[in-house]
Image (cartoon, rainbow, N blue to C red; front, side, top):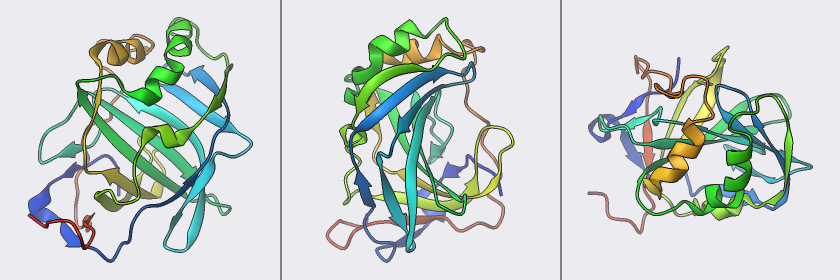
Length: 213
């Protein structure tokens, strides 16, 4: 079963049983590299983890796709951040955050000069100092979608636990431009097409204290 997919509220199973996002992130040294098909931020020495279904997944790296890969109710947005986590038995869990045009994103702002510097330099790891993933401000009470899928870059390995934050954050037009101009295919971006849902279940976590409509 492949990713990304379109997350359609009419077809999801709403539940509070998934539990709040159990993230334990912390600041850590990081490097940035322009891989041509994306800009990837890799944490060194441990930036914390997320617990899902009793398993600890270590936060390894973050990268961006433009436009978004996942859709919500048929709509795709301007930018998608993937936080890639890995367990000790090499299973992956990815947290996705979607962005629409608006105010600056504070996380991208932290590394914006490095993104600009590496726009035309591919394959070189650049130290960016200590980066705190908590700046992303996902929040443990956030509503989120959960489904099983795949990585969205080759070889698109399956068995990945996907968590997509329901609330769409904002990013400036200039920040999207900086990320996009570094790509090999700047005109078309680096988003994989929507994949068939087939018979998969998609769950939407809504805390007990949130309205369900």
